[in-house]
Length: 387
Ligand SMILES: Cc1cc2nc3c(=O)[nH]c(=O)nc-3n(C[C@H](O)[C@H](O)[C@H](O)COP(=O)(O)OP(=O)(O)OC[C@H]3O[C@@H](n4cnc5c(N)ncnc54)[C@H](O)[C@@H]3O)c2cc1C
Image 1 (cartoon, rainbow, N blue to C red):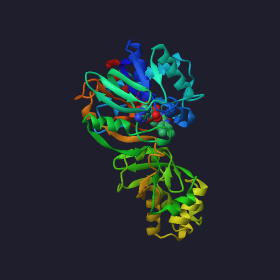
Image 2 (cartoon, rainbow, N blue to C red):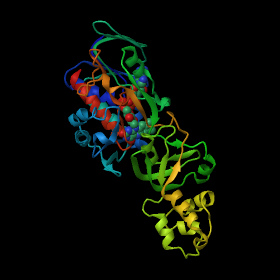
Image 3 (cartoon, helix red, strand yellow):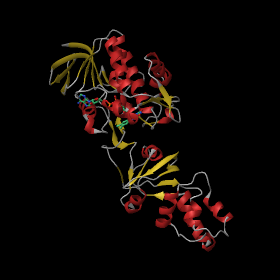
Image 4 (cartoon, rainbow, N blue to C red):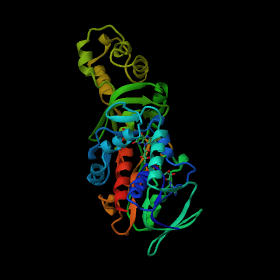
């Protein structure tokens, strides 16, 4: 069976590429090894899919080449995707920071993509495992459902996160097979775990605090959530994109108040430190964090040194994490097929004619907040226009 285009992977990027190419009259086949398409879309955004962000800039992405994503994002923007959502009468809302979610369900996004695929006469085969991809005049794709040939092949197999719903390293293997470089991959948008002080974290598990979390020159102000093994919550997931073993994470647990000034102003107070701190921190957190980490005495009995230590541990709590919670829990994979190998206009491999890589398998990773889906739509569109 001969096709113009075969797309491997029926996730966000693969389906969007198929729609774009199909609308141009290309004969398109999408191969998906799961029984169901778009499984990651279905579980995304807590089941409501944060499908894009109102403001998408190159600064919201991590890649060895920070300029690579610009062309695709400009040609198919978040506004374009919002127009499509409106056309399908899917109700959406802005949760915070420009993040757009479905009011009802992420299923509506998958249904919209399916409807568009039908209109564009895209053929989708599920439960179809690709065994090998070869290239002579055309590409030859061997699967458990037979052999298919095509002029162009698009690899849209995503990253390594959430293997339980179908993530594989297939895309990276194909890239290596054709001699393309891979930027080392690691789990990201993921909780951080601290082997050293796990005991302290356990006691605070479930507590959420507004914080400013920094690593190197990057900072995010949002909530952090204490877990049994370390920290999670939006600010920590964001910083995980920039964290590596050995890098210190600095956390301002009281970003709205300078604790040193506050304590100095209240030098004569007879209030115990934990009670005093519950003015600026959640009660339970103030109580446990003080008992575990700080001298819990009346303020007027604290030495100047104590006050400095307390301020440091609250406005600049330095944590050395040992690891992340790994691919099983990570929302995305950092790294991937090197952008040096691809055209930023079309996503085509520079040294292999008619071979394309799109979506998360490429070394472009977005922040938390709808950016990863926008990259899937935009890179899928760029390749869909070219194949
Ligand atoms: C829990 C969770 C929540 C998330 N929430 C959001 C969110 O709200 N907003 C956001 O922007 N991003 C979110 N993300 C990230 C986002 O889902 C991904 O970045 C995005 O889905 C990547 O799209 P993709 O098409 O490149 O890859 P995927 O969506 O992973 O699709 C790849 C497809 O290829 C298939 N496949 C893999 N190997 C093979 C093979 N060998 N043969 C055939 N098929 C194969 C897979 O089964 C899959 O269907 C979330 C991720 C997770 C895990």
